[in-house]
Amino acid sequence: MRIALRHIEAFLAVAEHSNFSTASRNLNVAQPALSQAVKDLEAELGLRLFDRTTRRVELTAAGVEFQGSASKIMEDLEHAVQNVRDLAARRRGRIRVAAPPLLSSVILPQAIAAFHNDFPGITIELIDKGTEEIVASVAAGNADCGLGTFSPTDEGIERTLLMRDNLMLFCPEGHPVLEKAAVSWTDLRDLPLIALTRSSGIRLLVDMATEAAELSAKPAFEVSLITTALALVEAKLGVSVLPTYALAAARHYAVSARPLGNPVVTRDVVMIHASGRSISPAVVSFSGIVRSYAQKLVPLRDVKA
Image (tube, rainbow, N blue to C red):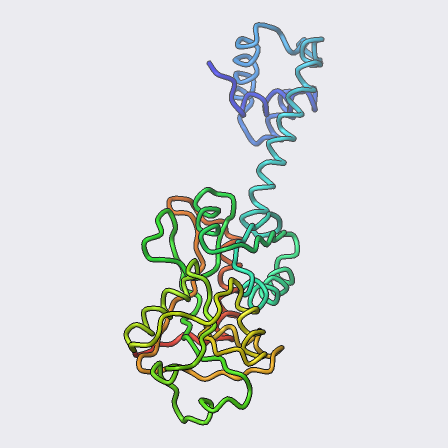
């Protein structure tokens, strides 16, 4: 026989009440069943835990020692059960979310504040890093979820769509191209282009579109950060093709933006988590809040190229 929870519960009830009848009523079990559970426990331990008389039940020395350990076991179990229930009810826990710097700054602050308002017992750890590092962190379990745009060939992750983003042209204020009613990729011809580095998924989309429009592929500048590109545009060193959500950062610079057409280039901003791993209730709730704030920047809609 292996010691089961019912054996420990029976022992502790008898030890508390010093009476089998009272203990059985307290546990809502038949007295013979409770007595048998105590006997089975004593047999498994090889020691008597109670001295029984016709008038009283008392703990033996072994029973006193076992009571302390058994009580601690039950306390730890109750604590563990309550912790899991708190996680399920989103009363406590931690979420580690990885996101690129710009998305971290334009979407996540308000989303985190709203989440904390609804679930104050849950801590959020924000990890801002590059796209490739985000995928690796999520797949390895070092982050619970990740935010960004990722290659369809990336493995080990599952995606939840947050918003659909279009590429836009950012120019210095007063630039002649802004006078056009509609701006297309061919309007970029002979304009100095400030591009993101080739490690960026945005750069890949821009290169494909400029190649299709038969434009020069050599940019005037290559930078790693969208904010750096905006600063260079403000300094009138060129124009830049950036995602729509860059508008949130562009308000701090003397730049203007226009949608790019012929073709319209879109990409999906998604929340990712590791394949084959369950998603905690807290992450599910957080994902919904992030999605609502993301769509305030770029409403989710079907876009035709």
